[in-house]
Amino acid sequence: MTGKDILHKMKEKACFSVPLSPDAGIGKSKITKHVIHGCFLLKGKSSRPMEDYLFSELRRLDKNELGLFAIFDGHMGHDVARYLQSHLFDNILKEHDFWTNTEDAIRRAYHTTDNNILEQSKKLGRGGSTAVTAILINCEKLVVANVGDSRAVICKKGVAHQLSVDHEPSREKNVIESKGGFVSNIPGDVPRVDGQLAVARAFGDKSLKQHLSSEPDIKVEIIDDDVEFAILASDGLWKVMSNQEAVDLIKAIKDPNSAAKRLTEEALSRKSRDDISCIVVRFQ
Image 1 (cartoon, helix red, strand yellow):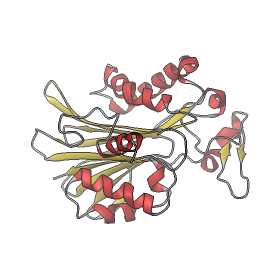
Image 2 (tube, rainbow, N blue to C red):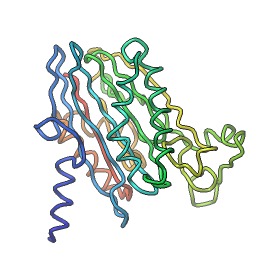
Image 3 (tube, rainbow, N blue to C red):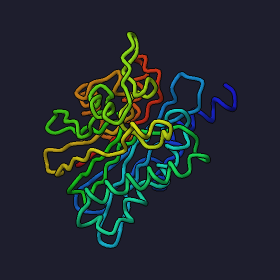
Image 4 (cartoon, one colour):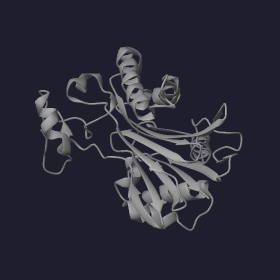
């Protein structure tokens, strides 16, 4: 095994590029409910660099505790996904009404961040990124937002419930066409915006932005005793696995790092060729 191979394995196992607590990938909530989180990444089989980034952290702000979890799946380069990893949550928490009007604060922060990315397109390149974010507020309320096809799923009494929306071009064809764009539907390929991008919403992608939205879908879920755990993952997982299959695969695995690793490795065994990133948050 070469030095490059060894470094790649270390990145996979340690959730490289993720700002985590010192216990490297697993954290515990300090308030009444017991919340633990873990993550794992696997690079796809393509020759391009890893384009997935993730964020998984518990953070205390004054008397409040936040769980901040996100998957960023870049395309046409990884710089936009890396920028989101560094800036999106900070922009959300800077909104003056985050605590009183969380959904609107997230929506504005998504748009602000997208505008910042577009303004820095010379530095960040022409690529873009999908995103799914989940903010856990005092272990009581989970606020999920997304653009693109990275996905958030919760397990509730053993049953999978999807909290995000897959923004597929075919589902938003009318909106795209109303903006002057088109959705290609070539046999053997997936529908694409202007024949290029396989998602209808994303950050960045300056050349497509006139026809491409960064408006997030937002869902609020109350974390009661029925909610067992949440999975956030890039489409490298969901292309080869249904929501319920993912839930069933890890429902007996108590350690979230081990659960995230199990999911990514199963996706790889099912011949997923894309980068695969996964976060598991368990409520106990």
